Image 1 (cartoon, rainbow, N blue to C red):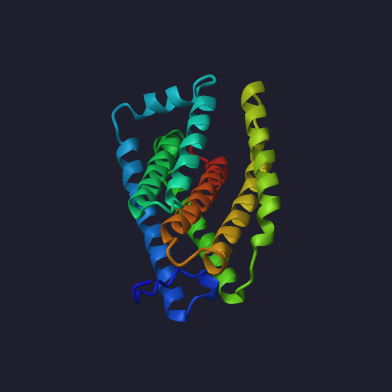
Image 2: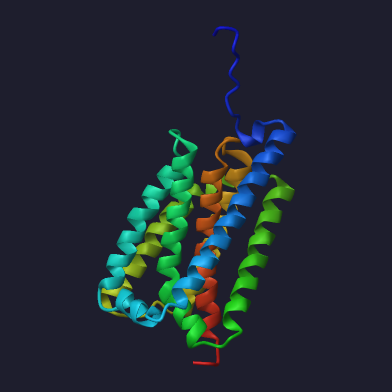
Length: 236
C-alpha cells in the first residue's frame, strides 16, 4: 500500500537463522533480567524487619489459600499482558508484575530457607535448578525436537497437582517428599515444553512473553527443588 511493504514477524522455527538467533538471544536476555529482578526484590523482602511476621501472616490458617488465589489471578493477567498484541509496554508490564508476584509468593519459603535452614540449602538449590535448566535447554536445542505434544499432559498434571495441594491445605495433611519429587519431574517437563515453544512456536517479536513462560517454569522448578533440599537439611 503506497509502495510500503510490511513484513510480519515469523514463527521462530521458520525464521531466517539470524532473525531466529536474535529472538533467542532477546528471550534469554529478558529471562536473565527477570531472574535478577526476582533475586533483588526477594533480597529486599527477606531482609525487611517484619519479613518473618509477614511470612507467618501469609501462611496462617486459610490465608495461604487467599494468597495462592490472588497469585493465580495476577499470573493470568500478567501472562495475557506479556503476550499482548497491543503494545510492547504492556508486555513489559506483564513480565514485571509477574516477577513481583513470584517474589511475594516465595517470601515464606525463602524466610525459612535463609533464617532457619542450613546456609548451604539456598546455594545448593540454586545450583541444582541452574544445572537442570541448562541440561533440559541443551536437550531441546541439540535435538531440535518439538515437545508441544506435552501440552495436554502438563495441563492435566497441573490440575491434579493443584487439586492435591488444595485438598492438603483444607484437610491439614502434608503431601510429603514423594509429592515434591513428582513436582520436580513435572517442573522439568514444563521447562522442556516451554523451551521447545521458544524454538518452534513463538513469533520472533514475542520474546517478552517467551521469557515470562521460561521464568515461570524455572521458578516452579526452583520452588520444589528448594523444598526438596530443605527436607534433607540437618539444620532445623
